[in-house]
Image 1 (cartoon, rainbow, N blue to C red):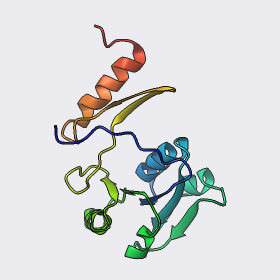
Image 2 (image 1 turned 45 degrees about the vertical axis):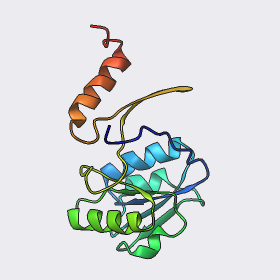
Image 3 (image 1 turned 180 degrees about the vertical axis):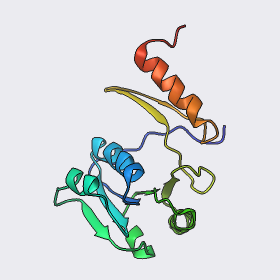
Length: 150
C-alpha cells in the first residue's frame, strides 16, 4: 500500500490552493463542501473562482506564489498548469511537513485526491495513488449508477 487512506477534518481550517483555473476551481469546490476556508494564490484568478468565493473568510491573492503563502494552512493543493511551480509548491510544503496534493503529478506531493462518491454521511473514495485515475473515475461512476454489481 503506497498511501494511508485517510479522511481529513478541514472544517474551519485554512487550505491553500495555488492555481486560478478550472482545475483549481474543482478542488476549491471540494474544500468548501468540507467546510474549509480557502486561500487562493495565482497570477491570474478566473472570474468563476471569484464568483464562487465571495466570502470574507476566504482569500484571493492574485500574485505569484511565494513561501509565505504556506503560513497558517493545514493542506496545500498545487493546481497550476506550470509543472515547475507545482513542484516548488510541493517541495516547500513538504519541508514544512504539510500535506500537499499536486494535481496530475502524484509523485511530486505526499497526498492524493481520490475519486469521491458523497452520499453523506457515507463517503466512498477510490484511489489508485495517481497511477490509474481513469480506473478510479470508472469505479466511482459505476457505484453512482448502481452498476458496480455487473
